[in-house]
Length: 516
Image 1 (tube, helix red, strand yellow):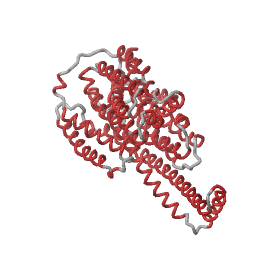
Image 2 (tube, rainbow, N blue to C red):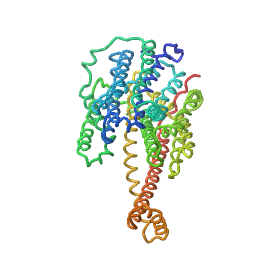
Image 3 (cartoon, rainbow, N blue to C red):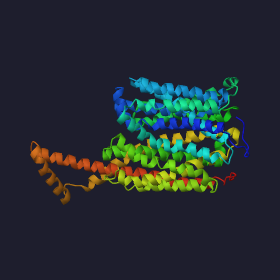
Image 4 (cartoon, rainbow, N blue to C red):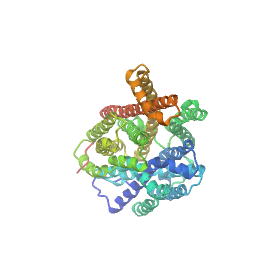
């Protein structure tokens, strides 16, 4: 695709191509989260255990992180139009197979197929926006792309929960069919064909590609499965960690030395782009981490079902649709760095608000923090995407988009893994601290145990059994409070990470303001 000058006005065909690409990115990101609220139902449908069912999400994420770095290089070889259409057809095929899966093996293989083909849509959507629009119109395209980054993860559990409760879990996958067909039509009309450059496959850095696939695939698997398998107490986690430790450095060295790398890691030596990419990592850490924590809290502490969890998350997702259209107008008048800082502060504030959780907090108490977060995320992701792209020439924007999105997805996996581990550690700590203060010598504890023992006595086989049941109830109460305090700690950590991320903005120079 040819570069556009600032005076060029995008045509209807340009906008249709952008719409189709962004629709694909939206589907790809949505499918990461859409299964989370319905995993129990899916596991029941394919006769998988709780531990085995985690591979439904892990398979998708591993394949996606491998596809993202390859997307720009392969799109240049096969042409963006041809490559997107082929991957969309395969994505729809894998989605339908996921819906009819009857075994765990079939489901995981098809989810990996979804991730590998859908992962292509995310970086290419950003690349098409930057190539088809002049600087004056890029904020509009990037705002649309921002919807895929923040709105799709927020609305995913809501859609998944609603489909599971009202129809069946199978429709979580069938729902991709209609937007997928629309995407194919938009790409066919909006993008012009280009000749293939198959000879570049022979010059490709295949050792680097193999090292990337093994290294990043192993790392994501460790991050996703480590907490459930007791980290380095499990032989598989140890072996995959060793593979990641060997092959990721090898991938980096090979890409830095190759004359024609499939992804240009040298871009990270440019301080403005490296800073924006690091902020993308923190964005992924915070976005996916908070989307992980809140549903788990609501299910564990409040006993919410998938539909109720979706209703809470919706208060963070839906208001963004009203805010995103305003962002391009503001970006033309305000330094994007100020917008990113403002969004980070609001996002951090919403997490600090959640750090005061009690076991009574439900939808009413969480609504305000969700609305604050909804106001912050659109103000952050769109100008941050512009800052990451603005430091690069057009010929490097495909590679830059891939790196930026790898960092965001990697941040999400690291965030979920770290927060899940931190949650367990802090729960043990708070349980121990509370337990040390609730001794048998405490008059209040003795009074509560006596009253509860008397209340349970009529239904218990004896006085000792009633006392044991009272102690069990006390232990459950302490465990609940320990978990609530641990969730509060996790939200506080996210808030601190977002606040500290603001200082990276000082490493990014003021961008040139596009013409209005």
